[in-house]
Amino acid sequence: MRLMWRELVSELTPDATFFPPASAAALTAAERSLSQPLPAALRGFLADTDGVVGEHGLGLVWTLDRIVTDNVQFRTNADFMRLYMPFGPLLFFAGAGSGDQFAFLSPPVERDDTFAWDHESDSRRWIASNLEMYLRWWLDGRIKL
Image 1: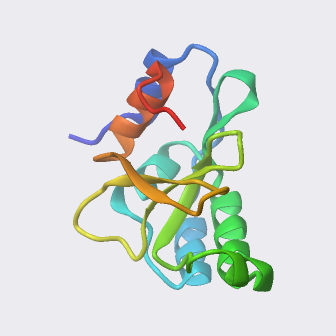
Image 2 (image 1 turned 90 degrees about the vertical axis):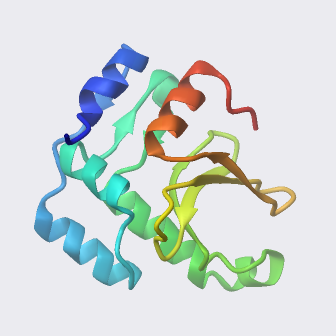
Image 3 (image 1 turned 135 degrees about the horizontal axis):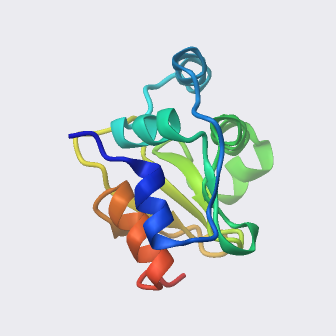
């Protein structure tokens, strides 16, 4: 059974704003731009809604365009290359509103774990075993950054 992302997010937060689904062509183009496939859960989410904004305008999951733009920038910015460990192992898909980011492993592996990157310490830590758990735990306050 395919997870209905809009319904799940609507149950978790009534303040969610959804975007029209990303097209198959846009998803394929994004994967070309990133030189990697998107994790299956993220691809499915974006095919259901091209990102979602929660309470206070926080991007719970970024739009496909933002995912591509931010990941390319993080991976190619010369200053970032000097300041931080490589970003190639991460695929950012959302921000915490503080400069910290949420990510999948890149390229996708068989596990759907999500991680948090701390912009001050450059630490990367596990936060949830999949996208659904990330959404549930982030919205109910179990994820603390």
